[in-house]
Image 1 (cartoon, rainbow, N blue to C red):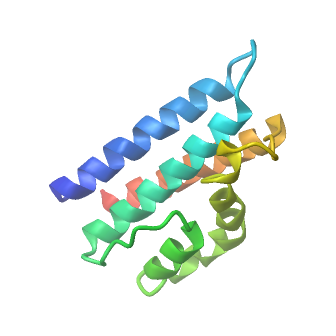
Image 2 (image 1 turned 90 degrees about the horizontal axis):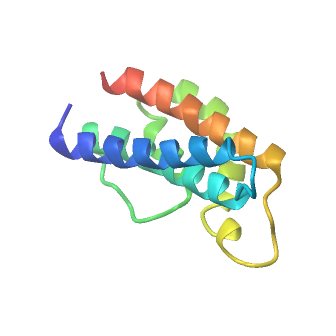
Length: 125
């Protein structure tokens, strides 16, 4: 694995740890933080894959767009499109007033980020 790829993975795993830890909090949990860090983990994992395969990384939080860049090499990953659409929303909406994340959406978000981690780490070796 390339050094730059390792750095993306390290950052993604840090976000995933934060999301998992916060998802287990029983006293005043921040479900919005869980959603945000889950989105960030998935974004960085997709960027790690792009980095490892010499696909230019675009500055974006749009997980579906990043997914589209991976599909020529991993077409079966298209099954994640719908879930990544929802997760993309958490990059911004969870950080501002107007929309509060629920426990259910937070648990779904961290589960998807964990699944993306498992899949991408297996791919990256």
